[in-house]
Length: 217
Image (tube, rainbow, N blue to C red):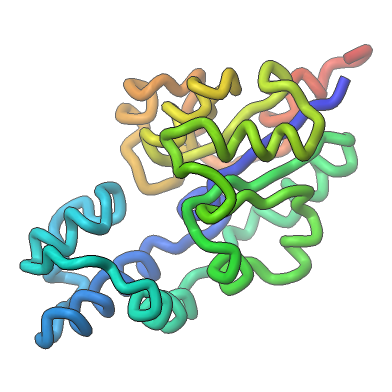
């Protein structure tokens, strides 16, 4: 029986909290014609839509993709893959559990954030240009289709309420990332089956949650 663990990217595999804030501040600076610092961003800027953040700063226009990419390219220099990621992915692969990423980032930005060694441990990557964005289930279902895994045999690890909603809609078990952007209580309210408080023995926990850690499965 094939099983899979799907991951969100930002806040789950990549420590990009400051990078996301820096991107917002950099883009706002370019479109508003005045310096916008990270400290000037509204509270919870990483957990609300970027359009809302920019509107609160005084910009209600369209988000130019070229300008956004320019701000992202500079900001992501500060983002780093969490230390546990490589070992976790390697352990899942050794247990014959498929892995995937479902993210709102573009494919180009994923390649900026993840080194080849990490990408090589991921079986499928679904980006915003591939499917309707979360909380729609489309991205998760596309990933599972590519992996030939049924939703009931998969879990999705995310740190946003939209991640939990997407997993529920896809029939995938939603797992909250307690080390991510959102408050664990918010993830529980959004439907997380469990919220993991830390990354200690993450591979073992995920294998248990998928049933891959049990003999005879």
